Length: 127
Image (tube, rainbow, N blue to C red):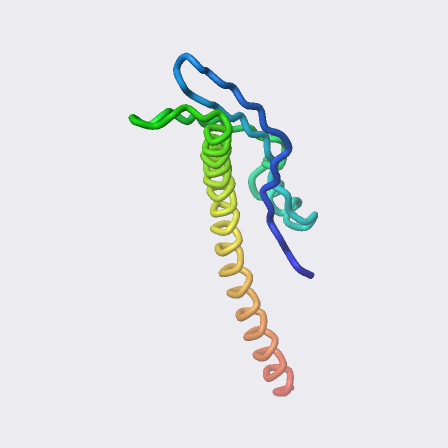
């Protein structure tokens, strides 16, 4: 099975302020994972971070530049997407840390179980 995590934009709203020469982008997104990963994430953190989220980013005109609404929208959207990915990365890092800890525990148990099984096999041969 192939596991994949994807940040999916669901909508964007733009706010243009000609007076201040700014463009803001409010981007709505959600984090998509396969169902197994959704279940693990929800159980480990008692939360479900896949509901639509939103972030807002604003571009400001640099000195000497000409105000261009289309370019402003592109830059604002890219800034919003960066913010969204930083938030998603933080959540996924948290998930990775928990899973790494769990893997250490499960490997330790597997090793101890193997030792007990082997010990008991040898022990039973003494009777």
